[in-house]
Length: 66
Image (tube, rainbow, N blue to C red; front, side, top):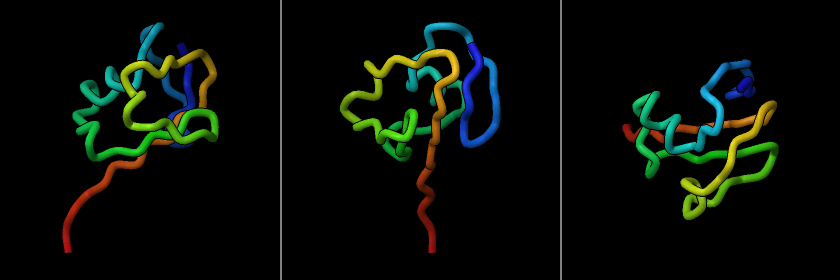
């Protein structure tokens, strides 16, 4: 399956969900915001949000510091 993630085309195994990406990329789901096809995905629905061929995904990872 091909997706556009943060502006770059990437290939993934079919039937992926956003939590599968976080594990692959080492991201903490409590520290990311996800947008799918220009719609913000509520954190409470991350695990149930289906991902389809050609979806445009934006992931923002929050980093603390000063």
